[in-house]
Length: 311
Image (cartoon, rainbow, N blue to C red; front, top):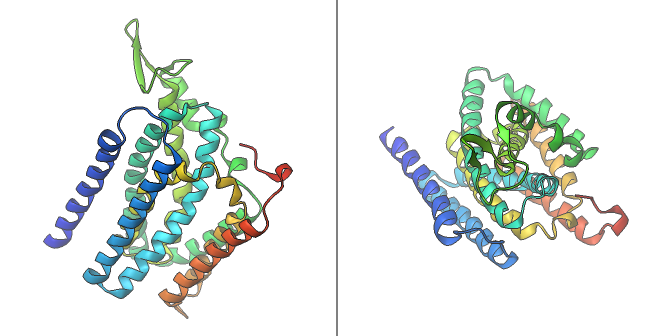
């Protein structure tokens, strides 16, 4: 128990340290993130996740390492949907490019806290009520089918976001950006800035995505260690991934089909787990294959200009 407690403390301290170094040391100041810099940081975060995967292999064994890698691939794949929504939010609020990195930093900090709570509560409920796995299975299949016939820009409407409406009622908001500040005081009155509103909306949309992603990883394993760490590493690289792929992300127009198949597969896996537990290696292979085929299809069958998504 002491070893487990020590690991959680050290792990979270290391993660927070890396994030602080990322924002205040290596990438301090408000500057536009270049694609070259974003690719380097994306490679760093992916490499760090793979290195941790090796650590898991030697510490907890091959099965745990396979589960971590499967969870990481799934969470990283589902995060692509977040990237589309970030583009929509930044475009809607006309967030200057030099401030977007700061918004995503605080958005990821909040996401780590919220997802940690979701994971703890979700695993606790499943351990006491194992029949919830069947409900999660049905939910994931439903979500997968729904994803085939809808897109995130249809579901996320920044103007009607409940967080935006509540904030406007509780605190005054400036009409224009005040540099990279979240709050300013004018004539003794505290105002929130549009940048703060954007952070809150990014946080609220991540809650929506967590409703899909957390049940999906719980469909692979209910090991708190695997679920939490795979989520953390997927979120860590999300900011760099956004800047690395923002110019080409529209090219992955078939990835939603791959994600829909993955969600449905995990849901089916949950529904039959009592009669036939699908091997971890097969699940990992299926996830990688579905994702790879959707990316390959996007490359082989590009959309015409008239078919491109409008952000």
